[in-house]
Image (cartoon, rainbow, N blue to C red; front, side):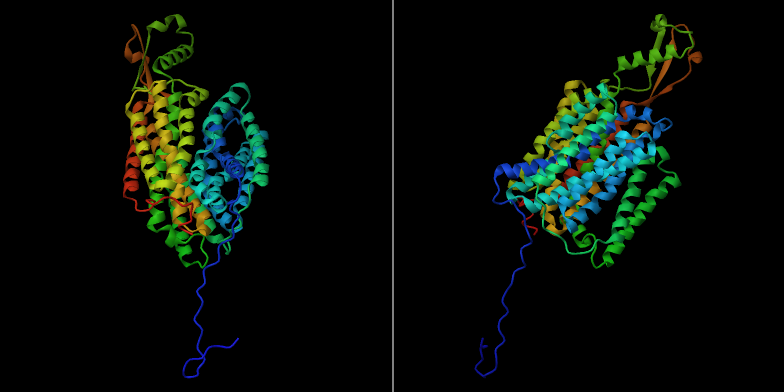
Length: 550
């Protein structure tokens, strides 16, 4: 081919031809039928519910599990603590590995880990091995984080916002089935039946994930930054360890603070190392950009509300009512009198309490499910998908505003209003509306803010913030409750008060003041979150399923 010459006879340099960056590889189901698309969505969402399903069923069964491990005592709480610790620490790492090695692959690995851990918990009589099993189960907490990216890569764009909204709120297994089925299994079988059910569930869902869901071909071409991964995971783990155990260890004790300080030091080291690493786990400029950092701030404030309500409402509902509590204490006093008092003398006993306990309905775990969890979970399940679809039309910022407003309202109502069964149900519906909107809007805001090759780690950082904030909310509530224990005092007709003794603590029960203070703290967090959402510049345009961010 002859090159063109200019008028002076010199060879002209050809104009560079503009080129566009190659499209990333895709397995997007653009030509698939609705049935195929909905089948993919259903299987992924069911898989992503595994961690929430087990948490709802197992965490509430701690009292039933404890007698099987003599000598454990108050350390039974570690069955919940270790789940949050390992899950919070591994979520960002699994998110990054999904960017590198494949999203469906990492979901299957988390499912295999969950299955092994569940089998171990169902069979073992050793407390140490039981905790190992719980740690293996905890890896599945990363599943929703990875699923956000998988949907972004394989679904037609128009389905992505609503589908992301459904991932966290689920298809009803954790919200509706778990409280009822868990209560029924505990009432009729041993606590081990919970783990056998979970093992059967994962054994059904994992093959479906292989057969129905395609893998994303999108890969980030870099090595895993092992140093950054260890610093991030260990730092997050130490902070969560302090937040989970501060009430037991003593918040201000130097030995307790050491864990917190060590965690913060490692996280600061993570930032320093990542700034100098050629291939960091996450682009720190992207992490600290307003489009991402403001979303993480809103997520932090909203997750505080979730943490406080998730811990307080089951306890409030299961607290005995005043008449039931008076009868219970009277029976205990008679039984502990060494025969000096009989049931016939109950009318001369007068039981006084150091504060109100108006929240209590005396519900069982199954009763909690029927009075509250079904309403909040059912509403959240419906509002998650609806808020995701609304995000596609108006942008995810408005659903976030709705979430923060309803979070604040429901928390204030719990704090100040009397609590009959129907009131618990109504307030649970209000909270459920916010729950679905929150877990639809925050991930969609992240999807719209980050490029596809940074999706896994970005969603992982969102998961870290959610875990830390939930633990902060729970820790603050625990501190308020510890300062307001329920106590009783006995007076006997005709017996001087000096002879009947003072107040006695009722283990595991707390006055209205403790719950109210914790709920008001959460309401303040929700109100701040509302301000952040209103002022947010990001998320005002209709969600595109990540098309706008590349």
